[in-house]
Image (cartoon, rainbow, N blue to C red; front, side, top):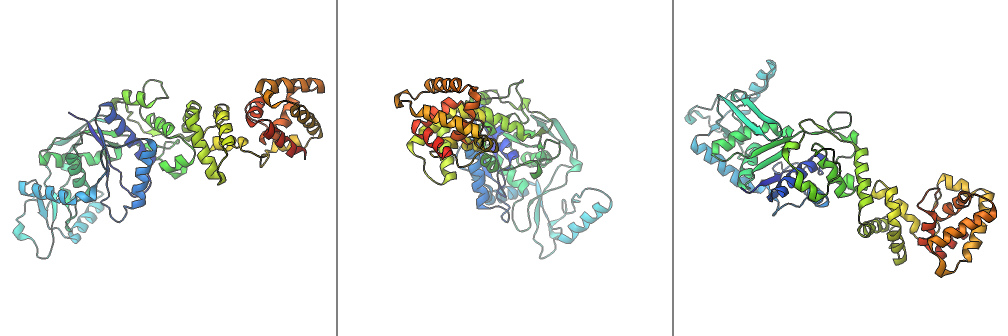
Length: 469
């Protein structure tokens, strides 16, 4: 049997981080078993479904690297098929026409509320002769659900879960206006798409019992279910905006790498021993539903940034440089010169460990853009306000100016600065502080000798002169 999973978001907003995790788990399970991962856009709510939301979902999945197989299925376009199945169930006796009026249904709701009970349709048209139907009332079509026994779901995460059929009423399949309900559409689409495993949030567990009844009424094979606990905030409450950004696009804007977000989401409710970092190949080979935790996972932005910092450190320098340069050019609204691009790529190995996000990395990479630093940190400003520092910087400028271009290497610069410090009878740090502030605008940076080497003699002297001027 070929494994087929699906991700079925409603296009009413951005791709939620919880939805992204659901998509990831479906994608991994399908890939591990050499199956298919399909995408279905559940756009039957025409008032709330929007094209920008659809675009955001597709873009978010694409950014995360979760490529679906085949074209997306749009649920609304399958409406005729949904109606056809409802008519089939009506013909086979597994459904019936219900002529209950809105007023009758409202009276049932009010009666249930008065008794402190959950509303259940009372089945008044279940076995009634259609000839009794009132004129001018368009009927809904309801499932003729079993009234005795239990409906049982053997869930790959939750275990065996059952509900007494007497607790479930005859749900609507087709509304009186002929539009299919979500419950019917989901089952028909899953069957027609050949879905073998339904992996989704456990907020859908109650729906599974009703949907199972439709599968059984049609004589269709029931897919395997796996209902994943939802994601909570660090405080254990339901994840909300106060816990941080919720859309995948927001995490991208925060400077996080897609592979880092993917790794973090993998560990958010699934585990493999104490291992924290997984390559895509490892995740695909190891992922299984049995290792998904039953307890809700807790979202931790600090942990996510820590994982992102790891991926920044381990990223291929050439590829990362291209991303940094693109973001830098977008920020400064100007193209970088070839010299500046080379500097950034050469400097990245030492800059990567100093950043948690791409935003951090882009910011500190600015030290390799030509021209004196646009601004000084508070500490750098204090250093360069000192007469002693300026005196030492003047001496350093003179010594560096005498270095031949061919001798401008990291080793030679270090030797020269140490000799200068000795001759001035000061510690190397006293001399390095003003030079670092002049070159980077900060009191902290990678090796000062490396920075000066990458900047080159001309740029280094230009920045020192700008301070001395």
